[in-house]
Image 1 (cartoon, rainbow, N blue to C red):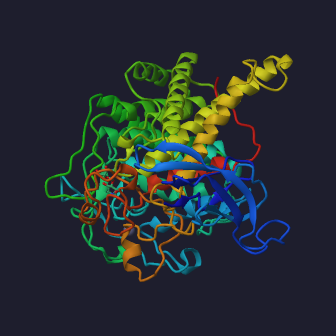
Image 2: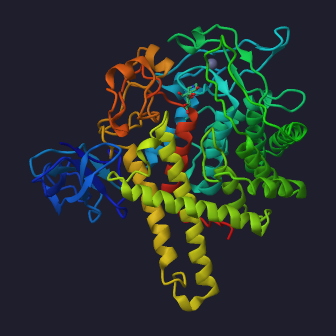
Image 3: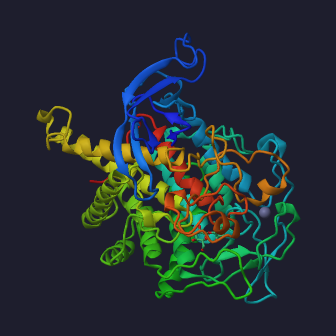
Length: 581
Ligand code: 9MR
Ligand code: ZN
């Protein structure tokens, strides 16, 4: 039996839920002060009870096998540090209630990407203890023609390995640029990276480091090399010690479409800061799109037999082409992209996912957030419907889960925390759509008095989507069956042993803060994971905080980036946002 809470904390006005497992006689719970003087007026004593409540018996949760009781203390609005205690004296970790609980988290999640920079020195001024000299400075060689060498320094290491891959890069940049585009007021220019203070928000400074590298990853024809890695993964050594030859692997249609899409998006976002850079990005996007037109069929990628670095293979490139058409349309307004978009929307694609295999949700983001209204009404309608239908489906899934997470037992795949976060993103998009509907109805029909004329139904729906989006963060930060906060450095019981080469060899006890773990995987495939997790373990419990567990506990750029999107939403201000109707 145990009590699980969001170890980072809760917003004063938000829903606040902890979870207790097993039970029987445990019907009541208490919330108590976690520190002396822990609340606003500073007089309280540690252990002093500030609230009592009754546990709600939710029955058995399918993904964890736990009998779950929900402890709801949403009424606790006073800022402070607390913990929850059940009838038999078991306590949760401590948490804060405050308007700023997600601020430091967003900052660390974003800053984490700086530690992945390749081809430059990480100095103490910005990296603190986590310094290292320049790494991976040598030219790469074309896999298919060893006589060709290319300078392709830069970019972020993808994950706990030192490879750099185009689709993951495009997707990570996509999450981050949309986070900035939708919630600019959540971003500052003071992350503590070399460009801080240059007048450009640091999330864009950091993404530019990746984009400059991506600009080098295109061949003469416009195709994007699928990846830049050594033939075999490096041993556990620091990046500057990895002297293996890096190769440019063949172009794939999936990488090229992701490339066109992310470059087109970036050219829009950076235009207000640097016109020349925006022009370079757009030119690269057009060239990549040209390649796609010349190669209308699927051009896949598979690792050559001798190679064991990331494969990022995908059996379908239609969703990538959909994303590319949508971004090109929104960036240029040219008719041919609308034609492509219309054709692709008629195909049977999901339109709601933001992962590296299925990027179709980015098309919805592009079209629905476009203030210039470049896509046709029909495309808007198509994407809106897909987003709202998926949000309703996820709402039902989250309600079925006793932990409030929008995951079915079978959704605990490799990198399940990305699935959780991508679903939170989708629910946020649905919230924005619904809010916009409410605002519009109110303007059109002032008689309805400040809420939509459907008797408040869309008002309520938006609130439900938002609440479920936030519940996904509760899950990530500790309301889960293993009691871990899956973000390093955030929470009393945050995981500490990410599968990350520098973390394992830098001799520093704690990992860099702000890294999202891949999380539980129902069929772990690394040796330690297989050994420690008996077959038949419920999916939500298939997790071990061990550095050798690459299939359970790795970090990647594209598992952090959706968390930046979600926290930027939570930290947003009152800025005006327009979503297409
Ligand atoms: O994140 C990827 C996951 O979705 C796949 O199931 C898995 C196996 O193909 O690969 C993961 O990506 C890894 C990549 O291949 C290499 N760098 C580390 C990535 C995270 O584990
Ligand atoms: Zn490097």
